Length: 405
Image (cartoon, rainbow, N blue to C red):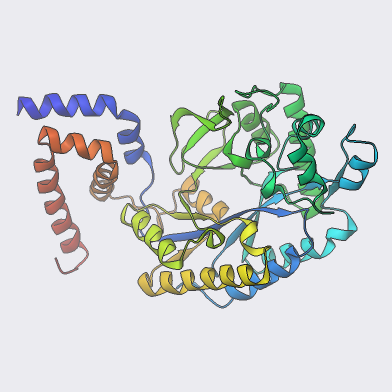
């Protein structure tokens, strides 16, 4: 007994963030699936056709409550005006904004999907980069100039990864923070532009490349945003190799940040253009649902604006993933990220589990899912009482719900 107590204290101290978040994160009663897609907005005009094709697929299916699958669109509000920038030899930045007439069809399809409950619009940024960073790179980097000049409508997905981070100064590595007043002005501008174009204040922010700072969070909250989509950790900068550097802070679904925003975790990738299959999406749904977590699949715009063949394959894979998910989980619920976050904040007992016994059982399963904790459980022998408790909890749960053991 003393041996178990000592090991329990040691493991709890070492992995206190993981253990605490496993308990604090709400437990869902039903599987939840959300497709989270970024980079839509100002850019190639083919987007209106692609978005229309996505709507045609998603509107064919419903969950048991009659809700269509939802694809959130992380909206980018501007791109470089390549002709103007080039005409003055890269000395000044100009932009094309989503409220320009040439993007009217793209906006129209976005709003159509929003009205149908198939799309939900999230703030990705005024741009997918910080303009001064791009202008600095244009003076010295031929590859960035090639990117700018490759088409009338720049495709930000092909911009060098470091430059795709909006909320950090990338002129040197490691990157450094932007000035507070610059951030404040930029946040005000992008929230106002989003509101002007779509008629409502965005409620969910998705930081480009998931690099952001507490100052950015505070300004978003001050301007009416409520939720922040994250990868489960926070990165304030990019390191000397240009890689996003995590602060060490663990983030869980429904967690309240110091800024007042509520965190949501995007927890898996689904990029058919990179070879991801519908079966992989189903596997992600199974893994997350076993731990009573929602499944938020990251699926970027590039999957749907490449060649006709690649776009067709991505659309087919998207549809097959929905079919497989509904077949595997008839009780599956489709929500937007905002709707999910609302249910967390409202403690909606139709979706959120309140039983302390079930919450504790699920928390134990979440802890067990951490590979390093599981390793130390096995080394210490704590795996024995854990498995005994697991067997007892499954029996009690099944008896309570009249399910065969």
